Length: 231
Length: 265
Image 1 (tube, rainbow over the protein chains, first blue to last red):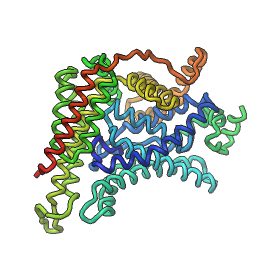
Image 2 (cartoon, rainbow over the protein chains, first blue to last red):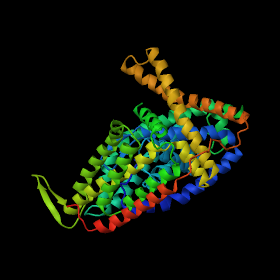
Image 3 (cartoon, rainbow over the protein chains, first blue to last red):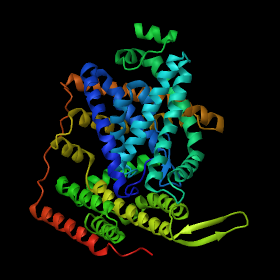
Image 4 (cartoon, rainbow over the protein chains, first blue to last red):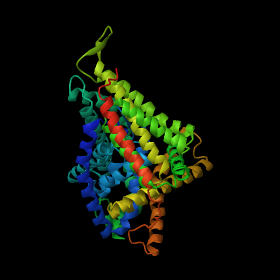
């Protein structure tokens, strides 16, 4: 997913920075409010960041100036909300550029927008819809993580197609970039969905009280969680 | 995990290279200014100049091992080559260069598609050499101090340092658990391997979180108030070095204007 350093030509890398910066700034505001209110959530937040880092470092090459990997931002968006997730993703993307030379500094704006903003927003929206529809939590988490991951890739395809339209125009380029991504990404997204369900289950089982203290997520209504949150 | 090897090696190089004791401000300015100029430049010659200059600085002056540098370049270059072939085949309009005729369809390759593909290839290689220069000569701690001096939000720096630490906690815990599973024959056979992996994935998260919470409690017990104090003594940037960077950037901008009309093909 990370578009590599220097791949986006002149007007585009600046445009994605301009779009991403205000949203991340809003996330920083939300994050500092949360850190003041519940400082004990900081280890969980940092762990979410490390989780995003590790998952999105497991990359497979893809033919489109970018690569395929799980993103890990879906689970984070469900637990701490899309605003804070955008900040975590920003930090992770900077580290990946600086520690693994994966992604880049000039393409940071574009990468933040796809992995840190669009993915989490879609995941969070899916999670809210699933909750409204009283779908079991496991299904909700699975759908949120899977669709959030796919949304990231659709966004990357749009970004690449805008920068490199083909002779038949933007939509043709979008279809081509998207098709090539889809081959590797759909199985990965499903894998990420399953992993998110396992992790969420573990978190709810052992750290239910922390999730309750956070209050950023709406606590699932499962009987086990109720017990935990009452402790 | 191959990536952890790479990140440890990059981290080590950032502390042990010949430029490790130079001012981080100088190094950051040098690589970022050249990066921005070369990525914005429509001329591919500037990309080549940047690549040559930065590679020389890294190998000749910072004394980064040639083998290590080539290993780092290999993966991005491999991906880039695939992407550029893709661009050359699909991108472009206007003047067709050639047609590939097969019994089923006719594929048109455009001249500006090939040009775009080559320009992109060179631009990425130039930009990557700038990024590598920064990454291989400057440590993350130094960069965090720079962010703090630039008055970045406090919470952002705090989270960055915590996440940085947690990445290593994560890797450490997963290595330990993997070794434990291996010792108990958890990796003998395909099915056991999958089961072990599932157990590791689930438990890793909780273990790492608990280890992190203990660290956090320990930090709180020592009066942690949201600021992580690190030794902030950094060498001051030398005036000569700053002047050199400005001169280099001006020369690059001139090079853009002089080479603007040179086409790739």
